[in-house]
Length: 102
Image: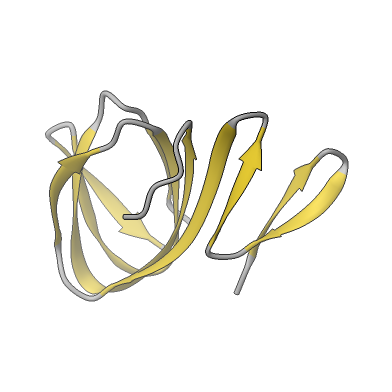
């Protein structure tokens, strides 16, 4: 499964890939989480889209349900952890000034 977005009036398929756009990176990843993911933060903006599974996220101390169709925008000020009930598949779309691996 791929996600689709519009860039420069062209439809672009997002895979696990990095795109350089005017000295900024848009990094897309598909992740499969079978176990909980520890509390952490980022120095970039991130959109998380849950495509399957269920669980919850602790986002800045608040419990937020994770289920198919959930969408979250995370900022550099946010800290969060992911907790699974059923294995979760999600897309991360990261907006950053550096190309990184995580």
